[in-house]
Length: 202
Image (cartoon, rainbow, N blue to C red; front, top):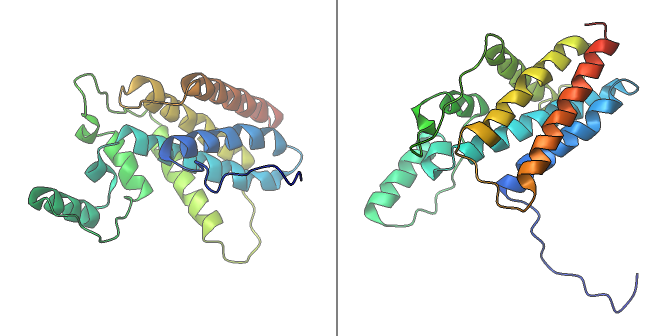
């Protein structure tokens, strides 16, 4: 490395928009690898879960809206008294956030829309969360899973991300080119999953 190169002490590594989009990008990158290396399904599931959570947070962006009940209560009380609370705040649980995007909690603007799932999406989101929890809270063991079923979960969840990003009217992506990037990644992911289902004979 050149000695006269100046590196910044701090970089913008993380915010909710970057997190949601980077997770979606990782999903699109990992999907083609699962045919030759099935282990990559772990990273597909983790990326998809994190991206959906990120877009749910973006669409519920009013702060008390995304917190669990205890944290929201503390926030609301400090807001009324105009006193800053230094108690740690906790993001609401994944399935609670999912329930909120289907509820009046999405009514943040006059043109806001809540998510209305199709006949299989509720089950797919529940399964996604269960798969993710199994990977994250891994207990050493041997296990097998149905890759076709996992592929169908991905195919069900991507349209939820698309709805939140482009149809809910609650998500503002501020980085230049982000909307186009998200749209392209969603198309890429859906195409890869369709190819996987053909490969698995679905």
